[in-house]
Length: 574
Image (cartoon, rainbow, N blue to C red; front, side):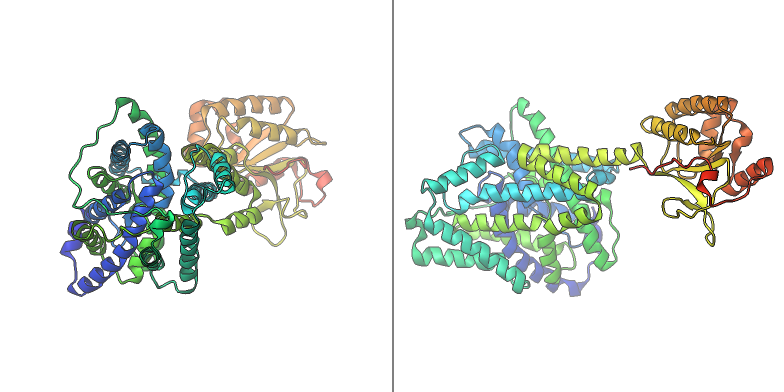
């Protein structure tokens, strides 16, 4: 429990700063907690229950001193996509809460066990381009899903296209409530303006207070505007949620996706804030901290949580030093729901929609997408594919697509790695890519070929075909020298391919020669029995020693004449 260590090393001068930061933080936690609960398809009060328990759980088990956990806009849609189909058409709030609580418990179990098993590296399964695309799709999904609420009516649809069509149809049929739209749109504008021009002010709190004042002054409820109403009074009891056995499969699938996104978000946020203070990131410890936070929330009618970069930034700017800030925020929320549960009874629902929409805008990274297009179009296309997966297929399939695309991207680079011919460049040490240095010199009868990847079952035939292409040069080379330093592995499939390739080349009077092969790889080749066909004397420790042996054997001299040097047909890989 890192929290105990924090207590032991706590400094008295931190106390006032932590308490003040916690009070400031609570002003953001309350409206956002309620808004994200509604985004998840749950009663607003569950957002406050969740905020309390996750803050206390992470304070005890989380390794970061100031990281703030809570209901998250990125997870809200994932939670809704998981529980709403199971809750049924009647939308029973009690069943939805039970499903969300079980979802939090499963998420917490996955995270905690993953941290104990030191699986923090799983956060790397989503590459940045696919995460950008996923978040862009999520931002659009959240934005479109909140528009009907912003305008005071409801849309019953199961996908993005249906929601867009339903929203447009509702507007066309006059279902929008003018007062609700005015409150919601004004709330969005106010939050964005304050965040842009007065970032130190609590924009969300100011908007919420003004919305409540407007409701009271203009009697917005009489004009058709839905209000939050009086929240249930008191602290939630310890509750063991009950769901049908058939629900566990879909809940587990949703929890796995939520755990992956929450972990990736937490690691990136923790890294950013730790870099400012010189602290080290403990990925496995973060998994345990998030896991315990989710377990605590799930046992008290809460739902899955993640790290919030915006709330952590507020805590930091307010002077937070330790997790006592989160504990203070939790205590403030407890006092509110126990003593003044009617504090937000006049809060318009469109104001909560405004909070969610502005949060969704912060998820989108359009400049990042443009930068990807400029820097590497292939990764930009991966980002667009992840975006399309979320937008067209849904949030949960979207995260599966994002992970799959990240893995396929890695596999694709190993399947078709960069490969090239090398030559000697006057004035530069070593041997260099002839595509970067067309003036590079060659030894007639020899090709130096580099394949930038381990050699395994998926790319062995690619390697073989490239070497065969080099062997078809006119005149054919006597040696094809493999600059094997990038080959960190050779599996059994690749070994068989090498054996067949060497026999084919030997029949043509061409020798397959290796230089700079790593010792562990050389031992594997010997264990595979490849040295029965490949001459053991054709393994050299350096390219220089291989070239010296070739020149001694043939008397060749360096030349810049590409026609005189064999193997001019090598082409770079994709």
